[in-house]
Image 1 (cartoon, rainbow, N blue to C red):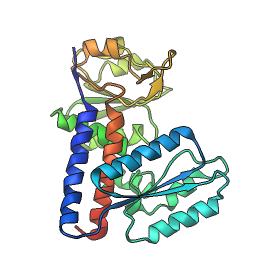
Image 2: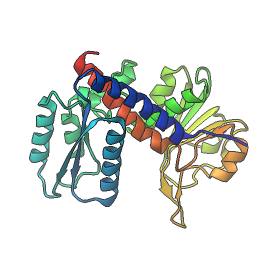
Image 3: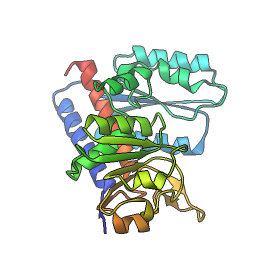
Image 4: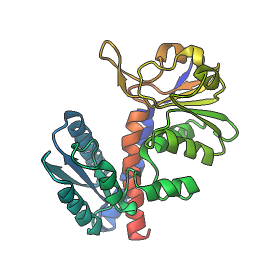
Length: 284
């Protein structure tokens, strides 16, 4: 039976570390880090995410700047707002909540955010720095995965690491970050032949495919570390990950639960990224 990788507890620790730094800044009378979050339209799930990010900012002591725009906002209007925030020296991080309405080119919007304020790390410059091994900021979800492994003293060097999923948000950057830690990395996707054979070779398995119970215990080897990035709903409407938790729990040495695993870490690493961006701007 596996040891549970408690992302909720690790996230609380990360946010606690950030809060300590903010408290010190306040004590010294210095400027407080600020995160600007833009929401376009009225997508209910996005509204929840934005509220949670505001709550996180309040928890660590950041200044939270919210911009809620109507769904009919034009791309030019949105880009003008981003340009304004880019030029504002009191704003450290800019986040545009996805998805945006269909008439807006999300790629163009994300590329408009200044790389030093790109706390989601979606900008091509951020991706390029990660690829070269010289990142300033790290993609929140993959960074959360690495932080959990570090917190439980799980060594990545020399391990066979299998990432299931090749998205730009999780799969690809997770592979690069594991590689940077000297893991031997395989990336699987929809065209991978005999997926179970590959996943069973993994010492560390990271699943980020977005399909409920896609990975089961027969697809992992005894003693594997299983990190489930998936956030799905099963047939009964219950929140679940990519991995069938019960069968994987019996064979894994460590496993993240859903909820309470990688999800809280993503939010915590956003706070850490904003703190890092503040350090870049203040030349700390």
